[in-house]
Figure 1: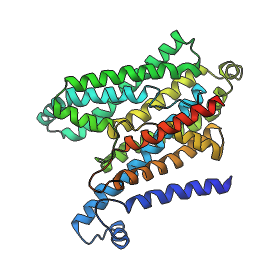
Figure 2 (figure 1 turned 90 degrees about the horizontal axis):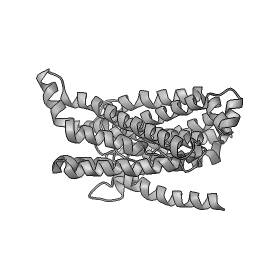
Figure 3 (figure 1 turned 180 degrees about the horizontal axis):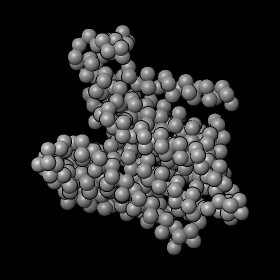
Figure 4 (figure 1 turned 45 degrees about the vertical axis):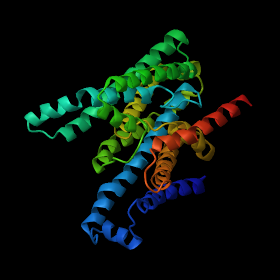
Length: 340
């Protein structure tokens, strides 16, 4: 087991280093080293390294880690290995909130803040995740209400309500795109496919406390989350407040997913695939699962982003397309395994 953890830590360290070497511009290893120590040979190379490649690798790792942790948490609290933020309605809810903010209030916020002497881009960067978080909370609340009224409140049936909510909120987002300004709608459509192409360094500074805070909270309540795996009745006999723990976990998943979707769009199926891989490597207990998801999820997203940047010579593939293609096959294999 120690060898496995050592390998995962090594993978988490090497994948960002490898990711820095890939990009449209050709930067030799010597030049990259000079940029690391602050001695880039040209201003353009400095811009490529510090403003494009390094932020993209850091944000990509945080995105993969956050989505994997959210997926593992949803799977544990629902006792359903097919649960995922994308299928659970959380991504659709966050996407709806961010779409509303982008399409309806972007220009108004910018004009208002310009009058008061503030920077529109910086302020809207805060308004966007707030709107996404509110949308995610709305989706979680709706899923919880539907599960309680239509499925008897059983955690393992919440996925059914999540799928229904996901389709409904996605339909609302598409309707807003249909009614919105064509240029704004085009920007949102690219964003909804999921991409790290427009990543900036301050994205990482916003995501880092959200991801780290969520991981620490989940580690702190790890034993209580493990109790939910025994079933609600058994968890109650152990003195666990099942409703409170489940709502707390859902709120954490909403915060993680909303922050990621707000800046990188809808990157699906990462939260479905990575927890299954981690369980085979390090076990099913919540604390080991969460730490494993951070290491493997972050590394996976960085490596997939390399494919997105390098697969086509003249353009970049939105990363959400690649993860959805891989995840759909994984989803079918998971369903088949559950039936055997």
